[in-house]
Amino acid sequence: MTRPAIHQILNGFAEGDAISSCARIMRDVVRGWGYASELYAPMRHVAPAVRSECRPLEEYHGASCDVVLHHYSIASPAVDVFDASSARRILLYHNITPAEFYDGFDDVVADQLRAARARMPAVVQRADAAWAVSDYNAAELRAAGARHVAVFPLVFDPGPLDAPDDPEVRKRFAARLTTFLTVGRVAPNKRVETLIEAFRWYHRVLNPYSRLVIVGSERSCPRYHAMLRMLAGDYDLPNVCFEGFASPGGLPTYYRCADAFVSTSEHEGYCLPLLEAMHCGVPVIAHATGGMPEAMGGAGVLYEDLTPPQLAVLMHRVTADAALRREILESQQRRMAAVRARNIAAELRALLEGA
Image 1 (tube, one colour):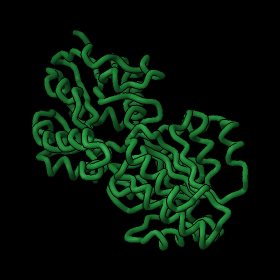
Image 2 (tube, helix red, strand yellow; image 1 turned 120 degrees about the horizontal axis):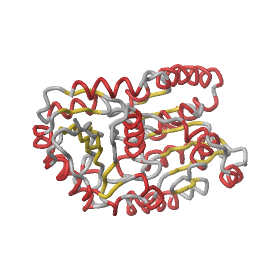
Image 3 (tube, rainbow, N blue to C red; image 1 turned 180 degrees about the vertical axis):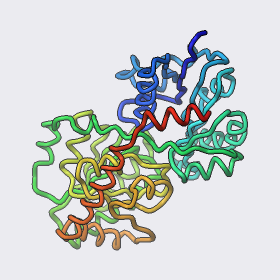
Image 4 (cartoon, rainbow, N blue to C red; image 1 turned 45 degrees about the vertical axis):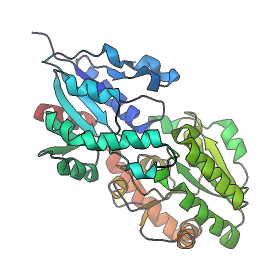
């Protein structure tokens, strides 16, 4: 008897992307069990540096004895291929960003997000199993008609964060300034403008020896990125640093240079950078929304309903109060010990057997 294959279908694949990293780790686990396992994606959405990791979407052919898993977050040809597969279909839901965030910034992406949300009930009904990376996402799947949803938290790989420093990044940020960092897609749902406004108040009223570092590609939403640059210019804030996409060595260096990590996002399915910052020993401040409280797991600092000046005061307390900072870091160490103790292979095997 031919052993079944366990393949994954993605909307795209890129270095440093959380969904791509999760898919790669899952593939490697499955291969370790002796199964054939490949990643398939539209090649126009696969970064050149990682094309060897991925196969063209049109090459996917699933047999009825196979299993295929799709990472669902936006409308794309990948959904059609997944939906038409004769293999046993598992939907892994990473969340669909509400389209309203993109209206006026990128109407094409807004349309794709609306299409994905409109199609979700049909895709859920046709899937043989539904998984979600957080309880928050699982609730959305149940609302779309899924009766049995398993939660498989987004996989965290600490390996890349243990790379040596990038000397150029370290040199650029050698000056002794209180440094606030945010990392991720520079997209409208991240509400980076709120962080810039909070930093403006902090920098001018509480501590002029400070800077804000924004790490993330401008390609995610160019108009939004341009708006943020104009906002920093209008506020005459020279210490707002737009760093763009981080290299593998650059990313851990940014974390090591930071005094605090801040996420002002208004919508997240999980938010892996929170774990990255905690792994690197950086105090984390995050907006208590979506799946972020699950990612934090009781660690760090969560806030709700703060104005930019109030957030600035919180940022000041976290960086200036040594006792509070120590308490935060201890909570984060406990959280990361639990994350590192997670048995990904056992979880994945149990879920696949259940499906």
